[in-house]
Image (cartoon, rainbow, N blue to C red; front, side, top):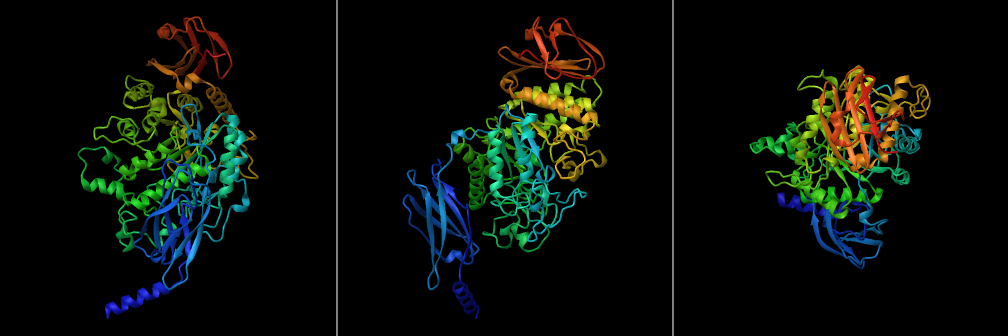
Length: 619
């Protein structure tokens, strides 16, 4: 009886009309180093079809059936001399209607070598798009999406910022002196709440319509490039959103980690967040599994990159976006949570195609040993090589805040910066590490420094002058603050004043700003625009002197250009310059890049008050 039921069920499935719902990647290009392409085909009972392609230069190497009848994975070989064009993928069935899909191979717009990633000559402006500017109110609400409201008074609701809002203010970003922008994810998050933040994607190939269209994303890339501004894409390989289109019909039984618990509606196991297991020689198997395989949170299913089809899918998705948007970099979220072998292969595949590109991985650790582990070239005891150029300098971020907040003692205060930089001996390439004062997941730097303007300016000066790639969070120039509710992520991602019609205060034009906000914005504009053209800061050598009586001095040097950073935590101070004789500045004229004042580097420099001084020999 059981066999008869199975035969009837199979006959019913075969009799159903199959229709292709999607093919991903949605298109591809000729001229890559990697000549293999794997297509994910989704459609009712598509696994019983036989795919055929008749196009010169393209051959089907292998066809894989998903464990769900609704998936096929087709391995294609694209010969080096294949011409761009459209072709038909035909799906043939026995005793039923056939179907087909038009697919396109495009010409590449530029060679791989011209995809230049962000580097130490750049300053990155990190933007939470929903909270930056609402350039197109008509796309605020879509009735077919799960979150269908706008409420600017609610920290975790959508506020309406979009891609058009960023495009509209590229002149402002350029005028300030930023050379790269990193918007948090712009792909669709069709989740019922908190969809504004973007890290719970429900389709890896679709722009969230509340942010705009793919055409507007392309416009953002093009107009940014015309101003010399690189576009960095925030990507997530570790997880997706629980409302992702494949969650109702997963291709394989191991597409997710702990998938059986999810499908059986059991209590999900979340990560223990013990990121040290990636390096720990004593880590238990239990801890390793829970860290890597546990879900980040219950609304973000953990993807199993050990599944070779998912691994290929994620890698191709990254390359598709690089090529489509002519990206200037990728920021990869929650880097140590994914399978680290996959992450190495993922980064290797990208860097093989784009040798001048850059990727930064998020390792939220205050231990420089853990951060350095992920940078390519690290001499790791386990032999691991990440193929990752850049990591995020959470250790120095912590040192910076403590250095400025603490009272000066032998082991406290500015010495935290001095000793933090001393750890650079462990990094394969310190100048490729991302330095920042805050980001979208932590209290605003102005908040961390107890709303002290002078300390905030000192912090920003360090971020811009240390041998790093600087990243500044939007609104830092306006002293945006979340002191009223520290740790509140929604408030940390507050609206940029002037980004909405009717805003009384406008940070873009300066209307309504306080004296302190205007001072901070002017300071940053001058510092950023000087840095933009300073080779000494971009790639010069670094010499610093141990802090003495609350004063820390650091030099960036390249040929005849010497840039001096002086941090003074005292009041009026006479600084004995003979201590810095080895730098060779005696008798030279230097200019204060903020005030424009010129002076001769002599025996004594009077520091008028607590704060920072940036001097340059450059005319």
